[in-house]
Amino acid sequence: MKRVTPFLIAGLTLAVAGCTADAKQGNNGHRADIPKAKVVGKPVNCLPLQTIRESQVRDDWTIDFRTSGGQWYRNTLPNRCFTLGFERAFSYSTSLTQLCNVDIITVLVNNGGPGPINRGACGLGEFTPVELEK
Image 1 (tube, one colour):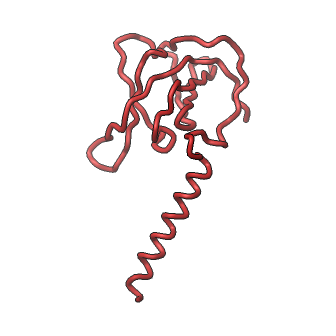
Image 2 (cartoon, one colour):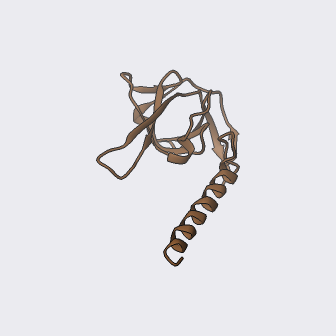
Image 3 (cartoon, one colour):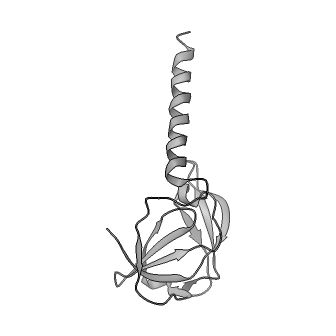
């Protein structure tokens, strides 16, 4: 019986952790704790690559991009990008000098092995200039 107990405890711990993740994420992929954003301009179709300084994956639907001028742009994906909010990592490939709403991102899984695994591809939406609440 003593040998079973550690496995039982580990299993219960994982089950509770999974419930906590579902409570934050919900079944629809939207997180309740992403910063609210006040729209401060008209959406644009593209951002020049040389101006993108940071990206923050918020959930399966939302990525915020910070540009060199300190301006944030919220990209709300037109369709849910499954596991993006969990993995919080993506890549893109473009032959242009800008990232656009017609481009495709690939969700990356870092499994601790020799390199990341591609987990699916999703289209981007428009880039809306926003001020993020703190």
